[in-house]
Amino acid sequence: MLNKVLIANRGEIAVRIMRTCREMSVGTVAVYSELDRNALHVRMADEAYALGGQTATESYLNVEAILAAIEQSGADAVHPGYGFFSENADFARAIIDKGVTFIGPPPEAIETMGDKISARLAAERADVAGVPGRSESVTDPAEIVAFGEEFGWPVAIKAAFGGGGRGMKVVAGPADAADAMASAQREAQASFGRGEIYLERYLEWPRHIEMQVLADGHGNTLWLGERDCSCQRRHQKLIEECPAPDFPDDVRVAMGEAAVKVARACDYTNAGTVEFLYQDGAFYFLEMNTRLQVEHPITELVTGLDLVAWQLKIASGEAIDFRQDEVRRFGHAIEVRLNAEDPSGGRFLPSPGTILRFDAPAGPGVRFDTGYEPGDAVSQHYDNLMAKLSVWAEDRESARLRMLRALEETRIEGVASTIPADVAILSHPDFAAARHSTRWVEDRLDLSGISSTAAPADPDPDEPEKVLREVTAEVDGRLYRVKLWVPAAEPGARGPSGARQPARRARAHAPSAATGSGNVAVPMQGTIVRVLVSVGDAVELGQTVCVLEAMKMENAIAADKSGTVKEVRVEEGASVGGGDIVVVIE
Image (cartoon, rainbow, N blue to C red; front, side, top):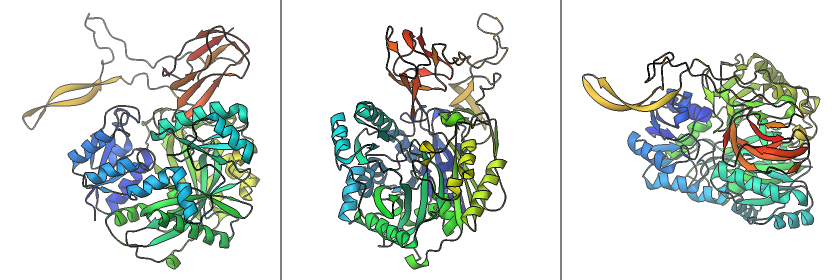
């Protein structure tokens, strides 16, 4: 068995992995960015090492910094969690080349399935049909137009080296091709470090159903059951359930067997998920996620298996000790993702900030996975998932009602959350009757009347700003030079001139512009990735004037009136705060 595992991730998945490691008497090592130095996963780990930097690129995607942490800690294994480097073959090779165990599939399998184009080809070789699409990268908007004219609109653009809906754009017609392609490439590059994209036909009313597989190094490959992930917005999953409702058992078995074929086609080992689209009784291979899925808890609740424990066992060389016909599934489980987003009016705007209150639900059949506690900050630089709330019950309707009860008990203050939208989804007759699809939330669910229950709050004005300084500390009579985060200036302290220094106050943002004022403001903190207007341009009401990236998602900032651009106060790459005015129209 492994002795010490470094978790190359953050947030709830790092905490979740640590818990199983602790139960198995395996040591844990955390890594952290400057913004995460006091995060829950850092507090829980046996050891923690700084990566430096604030953004994901500077920290959790810094290979050399992670390799240095492995060297310092003496970890004999690395678990990548999900996101970041979890599906990066080069990272897996770098870990293995260092003589350290990578808790995941072989780099060759990641390479085959991490590139969604080669994954389509591998599925075809395994005689598993995929969604109609192109099995090569797209480099010109004209290729998108040609594909749409041949297969019909809309067309889905997808990141070739990613998943989870990042970098996916739906193109309604030829006029949208160029902008959608550019946006998809930017998101793919920001999330996965690769900007390649490919095309698929966008099915009109499919369900997104994924099959959990488990494979060891002794020739055993099993399917454990499916999850329905059809409740999505912006191609991001909101609610998942296991098993899929109104799903014929013969299709379930056929899909499970197809998932095993796909896994064997790339010599897969460890835990993984094969995703399909299901429509009108037929299913199509979508992609394979060569990692642990965000929604794995509901499979654990239904099967009674600890998937992280099996990841560790398989990575240690152990064989799966049960057969396919011994896999048992009991009852029904539902998972809700609690994101730091404001769903008011159905807009789902990112809501970074400090969590002031975070009360978890409890009671029979309730599981709560999180990487945050009160006082922790949700940063604009990372994914906005705060927690995963999962419930189990004997049947689907009981699980649905239990989830509504658990959501009612959950209290989050300081940042907005998706709870109001989750309640609206779970309470809707279409969801109760399993009449939803991947397009149901955006096309048919009316969220215009919902509002946030916990508006974002400014930081504590009395919390002193901290800076990293090298100081001298005495430990057991010996002096050490160490780096510490210390207050930049004590409230009320005297400055160099002897004048009394005021306490730091939260940065005052410009007030949000009223409709029609012409002062176009951004709704949240983030980075401007595109500026689409110049001084003197004529703009129409609702026209996009710039694009804001926050929490790995792009948000179009629109003109609130028609007129002429008088000022452009930002440039591409600029950081802005919520309420900052970026364009003035007269």
